[in-house]
Image 1 (cartoon, rainbow, N blue to C red):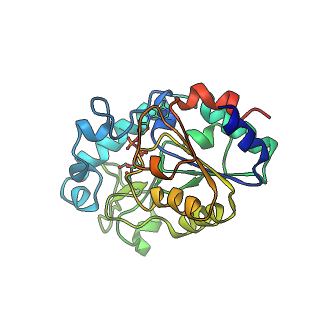
Image 2 (image 1 turned 90 degrees about the vertical axis):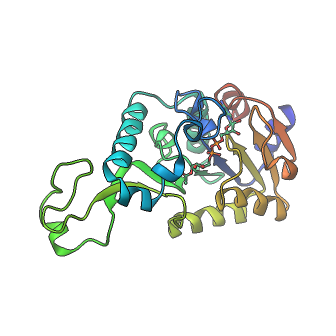
Length: 240
Ligand code: OAD
C-alpha cells in the first residue's frame, strides 16, 4: 500500500477506471460474482440486448426499473467519497472513467465522471425520434411510448453488441493518453473496449495498479495488485 500511496502522491495525472466492484460495498450487485452476480442470476442475452428489448419490452423495462429502485435505496461508499474528495483537492490530476451505470460516483461529488456504459437513471428513444415523439410526453406504460407512433423509451445504458458513446470513449482515451498512473478498481477486466484502456495505459509505460480482492484478466499488466476492497482501502490510499 505504501508504495502505491507514494505513486499517487508523485503522479502528474491519474486515470481511474472503475467497475461494479466499486459499488459492491454500497449494496449494488456485481455482474459476474458466482452467486450474487446479475449474470449468475439472469441471462444477459434476455435482458441487456436491443433484440431482447424489442422482443420483450415489458420484461426488460421492468428489470431495469427493479434495478433503478434498488440503486435509489443505496448510497455512495467511502471509496466513492475518497475519489471524489481527491478530485476536488486536485482537479487537474485525476480523471475518473467508469463502466458503472449506477450514478454513485456522480452522487459522491464527481459530476465529470466519464460514464462509458451510460446511465441507468436516464431513458432515451429506442428508434430515432420523429416530430410526434417530441410533441407530447410519452404515454405511460412499461415501457412508456410515443402516443402517436409507438416509439419506445429505453434505458440510456450500453447493451451488448452496441457501441460506446463516442464522446465518452474519446474522453477516456485522452485521459489514458496523459496518465502516468492508472488505478483499476473493482472490474473483472473482461469487457472491451473498457478493459483495453488498462492495456493502453500499460503500453504507454504508465504504472497500472489493480484494486480487487480477486485475481482478474488484467493482472498481467499490473505494476501492483492490491487484494483489497475499494471502500476499505481507498480512504487511506487517496489521502494527501
Ligand atoms: P464484474 O462483475 O465482471 O466484476 C466485478 C469485479 O469486482 C470482480 O473482479 C470482483 O472480484 C470485484 N469486486 C467485488 N467486490 C469488490 C470490492 N468490494 N472492491 C473491489 N473489487 C471488488 O463487473 P465489471 O467488470 O464492472 O456492461 O463488468 C463490466 C461490464 O460487464 C459492466 O459494465 C456491464 C457488464 O455486462 C454492460 O452492461 C455493457
